[in-house]
Image 1 (cartoon, rainbow over the protein chains, first blue to last red):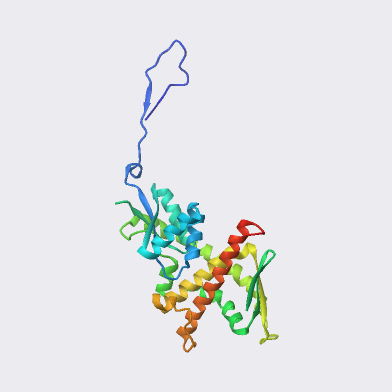
Image 2: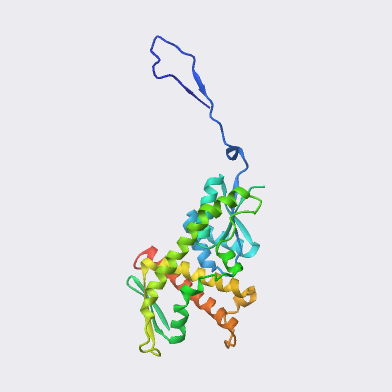
Length: 106
Length: 170
């Protein structure tokens, strides 16, 4: 919510402030979304690590940690936040041919 | 076969006719050829099917973009592979030079090929980890060898990319 004063308001005139209501979309108040990467026995571990570094800008150690989580547990949550950004990440991961999905955080 | 980095190129030399042929097959191997498992793997769903809106938008906008992305990478690789074309000296060893700026395209095409082949043959985890399986006695064995050979190339390119990122001494 924010307040605004009409532009033509002179110094001697005091208008009632106009209240602009900003509506928040449903997804703004919704649960965050998660970008999940799933295990794939074909993709090389070194390749997956490189992709995590590139897409999320993670340092090698963090990227390797997630890669190993994918490898051993079958999936890893790489990121969580707003849906639109998550969709972009999933698209990038698919561009690198990783198995990635966007999920609502439980 | 020898593989090394030479200035701004990856040089694969002493390529015997068999390995040269496997390399020539990369672009064709990326084609799912109507095998739904392979198509499914290249274009896997972005979310649970119940997320109808996400899946519908994806199909409409993202999937065609991904298809173009994969196609561009394959075309770049196919152009590089022109170096291995020609019937002259068929049985002689050949050399292939991959410019560093094409490394990303090679990573993508090799990955596409490996995923498509693995999906077509439905290789098990055990098979994919069996790097020393020999001799090659069937089309399936050959395809598994192909997946592993392409994986080896990917590993080398990744290592070189890492080196390029770190500069000439990397």
